[in-house]
Amino acid sequence: MPLRHSLYLALAIFLATLTAGFAAERAPILFSNPLVRDTAAAPQLQALRFVTVDGFAPFSAFDTSGTLRGVHVDLARAICGELKITTGCTLQAVAFEDVENLLISGQADVALAGLVPAVQNRKNLEFSVPYFRYPSKFLVQKGKPITDGMVIGVVKDSAHQRMAKALFTKLKLTAFDRNEDALTALKAGTVSALFGDGLQLAIMQSEDQSLVCCELQNENYFLPDVRPDTLSAAIANSRSDVLAAVNAVLKQMAIDGRLDEIYLRYMPVNPLK
Image (tube, rainbow, N blue to C red; front, side, top):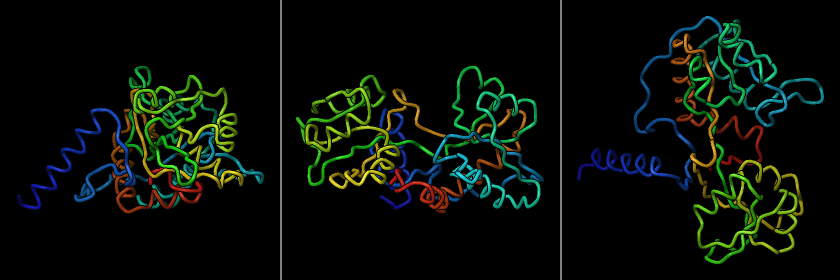
């Protein structure tokens, strides 16, 4: 079979698997076929007004000096740089409940604020390709691979408990009221692994020296029907030029690895790898 046909077949199989349910991924998330560069030029814009929110670390939060920092801050700066907007690029932290109205009224162009598509906001908003996807992961005691019958900790009534029940039918699940209780059980050996938000687990591991006992597994798990797991930019549906420009830049940054670079400035590990 010619190489070109083999590549097309591999891509088709990947897309079919992703659509069918969940995927365990080792590669960084890409938003287009990395073998084909996006040749569409981004529309020329004279200015971009971004809004985000406080208290959304590591994506956007004020530090002790009153400076807004995080992935969203650097991402907005990178988008403006790629579009060669040198003087008309602004970013403002606002209340989450005001984000949609600011976009609709034309007081803001792009929201990097954790808005997710819904029936109600789809009437007025469009959403870019994802720039981040929350993976679910295992935090495992070192030297213990995941095997049938292993006792795994999850947080009670969480999306991850529902995911684990759907995906890992041969594991024994123990539910805890809080993450802290699950971590205590992991350190004590009552459970051999935790299943939860990969980013949260990575941050906890980096901040808790007693978790040197454990390591994050490489595999990433996604089950969108159970847990919405992507972050996208929100843009008023009247601004198709802004949407096209932001999409073009995000795709290229994913391919070039610049999104990974931004993640690693604020995250102890890149949870997408």
